Amino acid sequence: MTGINQVWVADLTYIRITMAFVYLAVILDLYSRKAIGYALSDQIDTDLSLSALQMALQRRHPPAGVIHHSDRGVQYAAREYIDILRSYQFRISMSRKGNPYDNAAAESFIKTLKTEEVYLWEYQTMEDAQRRLPYFIEDVYNQKRLHASLGYRPPVEYEAMLVPETFNHPCLTLT
Image 1 (cartoon, one colour):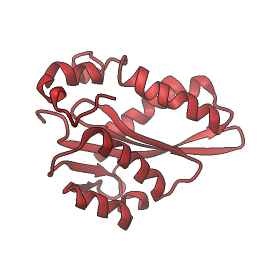
Image 2 (cartoon, rainbow, N blue to C red; image 1 turned 135 degrees about the vertical axis):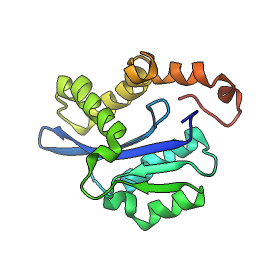
Image 3 (cartoon, rainbow, N blue to C red; image 1 turned 45 degrees about the horizontal axis):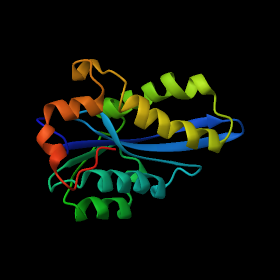
Image 4 (spheres, helix red, strand yellow; image 1 turned 90 degrees about the horizontal axis):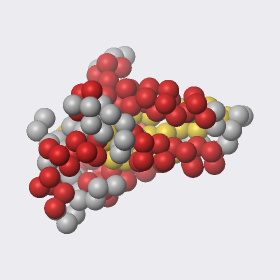
């Protein structure tokens, strides 16, 4: 990979709150490991994955040919989700059956999120998760967290350092 918007990886996870679970869908740009789209819901359904995808699309305005990789979950195989990917001319990739290593970057993000945020705060309510998760993803993970695979830089810095001409494009948002 030589830059952003070449490969996006997507995954879902659950987060325990006091009396139930909430669900997080996330999309990362594989080049920088930056979380470019995410959504939180009390339902694990296609709407959840679609919300994360819509955020990523609005932030990145991807060119045709981006690879979108996910597991084989029904949320990513749903007609509505596939139709949107096709309308943006994504190349659709899904993990081999029963092989979580095919989506290792997304799995690594989820492990980091849970270890460095969720387990430390022990969310009690959906509101706790709605307040804390965007802060962690945007301000900590994307802006500050160092990644060995990025030369010990955070995703935002890595993108700005290696592809500065990209950020002068009027359609690209750095959030």
